[in-house]
Amino acid sequence: MLEGPFLDRNWMGQNPDYDSSDIIMLGMPFDGTVSYRPGSRFAPEQIRLASWGLEEYSPEFDKDLADVNFHDAGDLEFPLGNTYACLDLIEKNVDQIYKDGKKVFGIGGEHLVTLPEVKAVSKYYKDLAIIHFDAHTDLREEYLGQEMSHSAVIRHISKFIEPKNIKQVGIRSGMKEEWEFMKKNNTLCHKYSDIDCLKDKSIFVTVDLDCLDPSVMSGTGTPEPGGMSFNELSDWFKYLKSFNIVGADVVELAPDYDNSGVSTAVATKVIRELLMVI
Image (cartoon, rainbow, N blue to C red; front, side, top):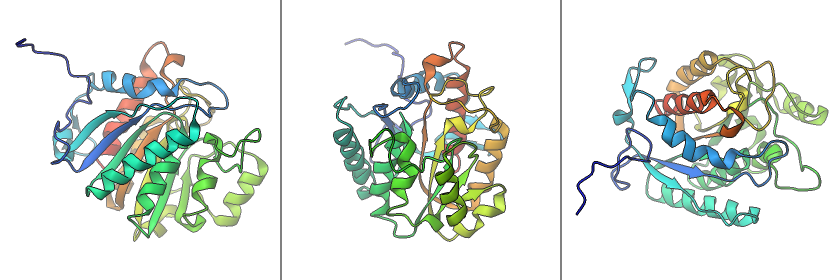
């Protein structure tokens, strides 16, 4: 019998026991519908490795990862090339997490993975609302003739979550009709108080990392200038502390486009800080 010690490839600070955990971290390495630069399927593995470069304690929240009580379940194995089968696999696993009385914390992968997560969570919370951090509207009906696309994820979600219960932060790119959708349904937020209408709701938070400026997050599939700083995003998380967050995900890191590793380090800290909120 080897005695080790051996390196841990799970997220640092996790509870190794699923049953006694409150939050389940789920890796979703899928990028089958990416419209510009693929590679987000490699994010969950790289984020796990980078997590060991962080401290477990967050001074911003005065909280330690041990206080969060989350279990890293690892990465789902997808039948690559079959988008619908991949989405179905995510939905079934997230459904099981909520059957077991836990919350999901998803790590993408591209943004389409949020759709089956939210579908599963909505079965357990009839008042579910979405807070969406992104550079892009993601409100297309389809992209290049394909209904399932990461650029259509929020539009698909709006078909079973009322638009009045969707709030979008950081948006700065999209087609004219997508901006018209936001204006019609008042989904776009500019200040903290714009999300106060969701305080009595159960919230799923989805963070597309390209909400951050490319000077902070160059390793993403569709970088868009004019974005938030890390501290600005962290301040939004602080405001969310008083909300009832029942699930979350962080998506769209494409680590190989930033050879310095800085984007992966930023993504890892975004995850740590958001874990402190849910």
